[in-house]
Image (cartoon, rainbow, N blue to C red; front, side, top):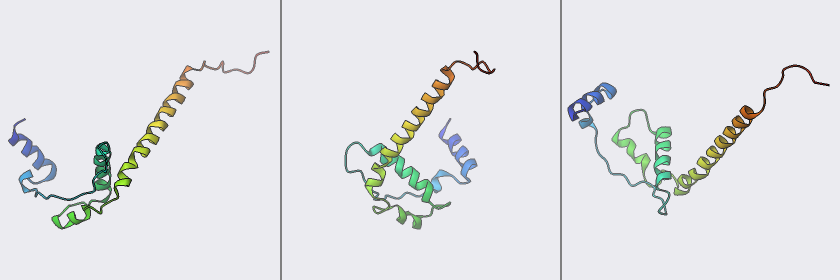
Length: 111
């Protein structure tokens, strides 16, 4: 799709051309190590979706500063993800065990 076609799709979706969007550089919380970058991106998205106003204006950008959240909060996302994955694995194991068990005869007991 051409740039013009993409812009028309954007206009249909949100009602204005992307050229109307402003730019701003923000200082946001940073990870303190080399391996939490992905967690921070996910945490930024989660917090933004939860806290951003319906229509974001330039004056609203102040809420997304260095004090927006503590870096430890984003790093703790690792534990939440691990817990969710463990729950999913346990549920999958339980589903497999149920489907592997032989079907019951449906009647009473055999002498």
